[in-house]
Image: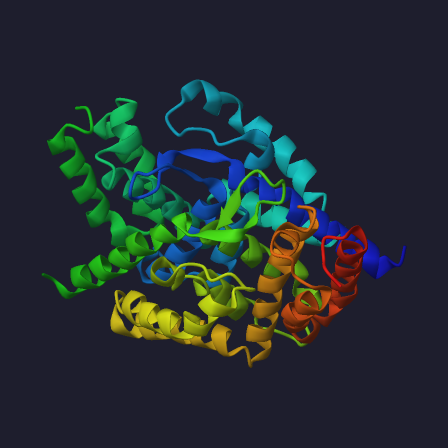
Amino acid sequence: MQESLVRLTRQLSFLVEVDKLKQVLRQTSLIDGSRRENSAEHSWHIALMALVLAEHAGAVVNLHHVLVMLLVHDIVEVDAGDTFAFDIQANATKAEREQLAAARIFSLLPEEQGKLLRSAWDEFEAGVTAEARFANALDRLAGLLSNQHNDGGTWRRHHVSREAVLRRMEPIREGAPGLWPFVMQVVDEAAASGALGA
Amino acid sequence: MQESLVRLTRQLSFLVEVDKLKQVLRQTSLIDGSRRENSAEHSWHIALMALVLAEHAGAVVNLHHVLVMLLVHDIVEVDAGDTFAFDIQANATKAEREQLAAARIFSLLPEEQGKLLRSAWDEFEAGVTAEARFANALDRLAGLLSNQHNDGGTWRRHHVSREAVLRRMEPIREGAPGLWPFVMQVVDEAAASGALGA
């Protein structure tokens, strides 16, 4: 096979494989509560959040790089599934499962492309750069918005405490400090309504 | 209300509103055929296609701008619904319905942000710039990939001819010529298998 054709075949096999992300269900629901959302449509939504909310980031960020991270941030769930934020047992094995998944899935691509997207995923996971902090903040914001519009959603269903939610939302305070007053307002309202435990 | 709070409130109301795109079903199916896909997860998938397939574009493109267009390209469907490519009647009213939708939805945002994203949507629709041509090519490619993996999918179901599909795929020849041999191969295989009419 011609080299360029080998290359395109690998690119398409990656794109076909990650189509499965459309079937990975998260714990959170659509904002209207009609069903649980999947990780592919969630990834679209937070990429759009990045475009709209960039001014609230904690530092000047390279927005394109934020988008690249957000587009790939959940791809490993094709193998590893979505791990619920407040599930302690599942989170103990999450890193290992996701590393194996990343190794397999990104290697479907031509080598240099696989490395590039893998490094974007690694950067998101490490959460150290300004771009990764902002991207992680948006990932947390998505869950908060869903729960805000679903009478507490996963918080109420899993008896999560106000303190645990604030700990979970901490990346927003760091990565998108302009959104923090809004987060506090939502959390306080949820606590007042009984959606969050003391 | 403080000006910055008014601004954030408008940004969030837009993001909450477009969550509805997760419920707009396209005619095409997931690649494994298990269900129809929605326009939000489709938007994620083609944004990822842009990252992976940029080298096949017909010109050097500003990839960030391509991503912005792809993230907003279907937003109007929140009001206007998805219009099936081969439905002549529905396509007669599509432009008008989508213009009304764009006017409403983008105006939820702070004015200058609404204008910016609206202009990205307009640019995608016009399909004139190199970025818009590449973005439109990917939009067509997504449908082709789905049908390739679903025994002809919408082509077979709606008795579409080989000629009509090639006309529909024309933006790929213009916007991503590197992908054209692959398109021809898929179309020829579909025709040979009887998925496409003569």
